[in-house]
Length: 111
Ligand SMILES: [Zn+2]
Image (cartoon, rainbow, N blue to C red):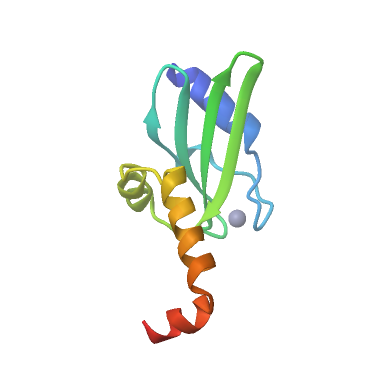
């Protein structure tokens, strides 16, 4: 994805801050990661300083974008993004632990 495309996509997909509704200033956009098919951007509102993470991907049927509000810094997003993903077996193991031991909340209070 070239520089011109990134700028157009970030402005078109996320024009206003979801917290204060002011327009994003393009100067507050950081591209954290990119490859041929997607990029990950970190936008900070110039008015209220809230931040969002935006992932834009090129799919066969067009562009798909996701955005989430975050209190992480851009550096923290980069660090956590490099961590291995949670896999389904880990989710199932936690579910089984909670399900089999009962009184999960009580056990968590003792930890
Ligand atoms: Zn804002």
